[in-house]
Image 1 (cartoon, rainbow, N blue to C red):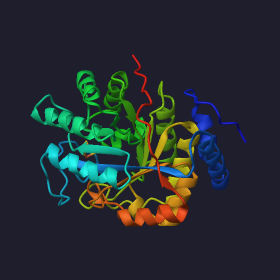
Image 2 (tube, helix red, strand yellow):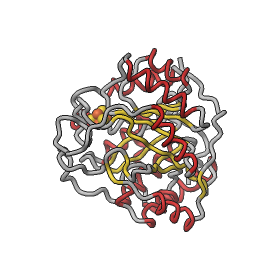
Image 3 (cartoon, rainbow, N blue to C red):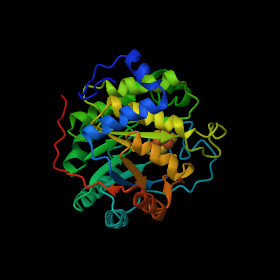
Length: 332
Ligand code: SF4
């Protein structure tokens, strides 16, 4: 077995292919070993994701139930109040979450009253001692700076897939737009959360190419969500087959080996996974899950908090307590 004990940003496609395509048990064993070198294997970070503005998005992401152009039947909701958001964040903290992510279905952040309200929400949630994350669409350098000054800890902006496959699923913005936002986030000294979705109809080569892009960024994203497509009726991808959980295990294990220090998050798709299937993901190096008190991850189903608690008890997992004092180093 290779000694994957160093952080590298120079992975070749061939190296990633040879990791990804290994026999599954060998891959999981290697990933579990890396995981134990860099993390406490019995700790899993519980993150709460809250949709603070739902639906009505002008973008055309083929998988998304919040795109206005698809008839998905979701209820469009305008921006929540700071008071309601902070109250939900407090309950999330009381239930064991250490990270709170606020999502708004926007193409991009605009310099308007809504952005001022978001900044106030960031301040309010930050005061609770939670890691505050936002996912608000594209972001300029000056907006990233203002979020950082308000106390934002992390910004999520997923690459979704490979550069090559991206234009098959989204046409209203480019892959380079995504990468530019990640640069702005990094430059502002905010930690980067960026991963992807499998099951969009992409090939194994697309998955490998996406992992190649993420793992060869000048600094690995501190957070890498791995999502399985949650099929939403009314979207162009609604009739694709369910993602096989072993595909998730393979993806998580490869991400863990390539980006050893990152938090690898088992994200969308858990509602369709058994406890056994999720256990394999934890064994492969996933060390975070998302919860929400509405039992929805944005607009798709998510497991019940009680079921997650039972799973943690069964597996001997405990919610990770995060040290927010860890500094994020801006890249100029
Ligand atoms: S994924 Fe985000 S940007 Fe794309 S349609 Fe949905 S809410 Fe809009």
